[in-house]
Image (cartoon, rainbow, N blue to C red):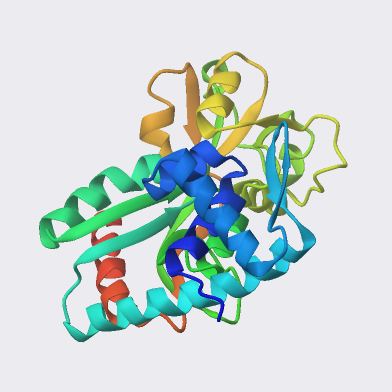
Length: 295
């Protein structure tokens, strides 16, 4: 009878995620030869290759893709059994895998994590910062317990807990500080600096300005809010940033900020987690700490 181990399934998942034996082995805290041997042994037991190996790395074979999808279901179920045992203890302790989007992480995490670790000293917090689509995928795959994102995400299998709202502010060169604040129609005629595609904040800014990403030639992309603000300071254009980022990002650039007339553009920040997660009551405690930290 074929014998598969959970460790082997986790090795396959790590290798599929990283596409490199060395990085996958580091993630799994074993040596590269040991991980390679375990994957090879599993392939021999299955009688089919899980990965296609090449000079630039490894990628899943067609069979490997189907195998990994089912393996992740198994790993997610095992993780939820462990979470069920933790939830039965009634305390928030142990590993917490937390995702967060880049337009929130640098501004909210320092105060939030400090407060969370003081109130729950037994937590082992692992933070993953990436874009919303990747966070949602990793929640679905069971690689994250919860994520801090802009709502809504509108996935029926996720619980969404709104926590607070914040406005977007206009950032423009310091020399323009005394000019009238442009309305959204005027803003469409200006050189608008935005985050590159994939950031939900970009989509929110475009929605406020009633713009399509591919339409105006004046749109310029940046990789971070810091880059956008520095470009504004150099006189290249104007941008919008969330209010929580203003103090950090404008302190070293010759820029001015201004509020838009009501109704101001805004976003809702909240936490999401799988509806099947047994840790839901504990995650609600985390959400309350986050709400207090943001207040």
